[in-house]
Length: 184
Image (tube, rainbow, N blue to C red; front, side):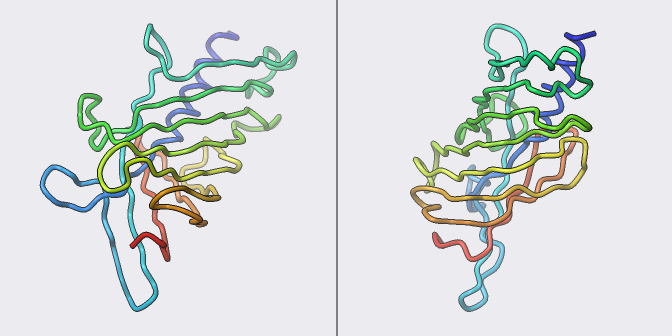
């Protein structure tokens, strides 16, 4: 039962972290899209896919801490996961790699499945190569729509602060909408 609960929590954490990327729809590169520019108001949509592996030889999510209460908790309270997922432009794992999603998720709620998340989107492709977007906040995994704070970034996303709106889908996918993006 304990292994089943850990597996389910890992699966929910990972599926809630599906994310989006920034690209212009030119040729093969479709992961950066400026969606509006009105005077000083600017907005961009980032769209991409997580390729997380929770088992096997090449897994990308590891439980590194298991608290004394974790085994007796319905929601794996006290469990800490380290994540290093590949981000791709398409749902297919073999599609163009555009970065990594790297961070720490802590099961931090005694009464429901929610994690405290601290993570970075590290981009390795296109015009945002080397740039990061940093997110932090409470991620109520079972809630369909939720928000996380974008607390900063580097490179093309330097000093950017905004909200990440996440909607869990069957595929590990998320859209990030950036308003007043300083890089456009």
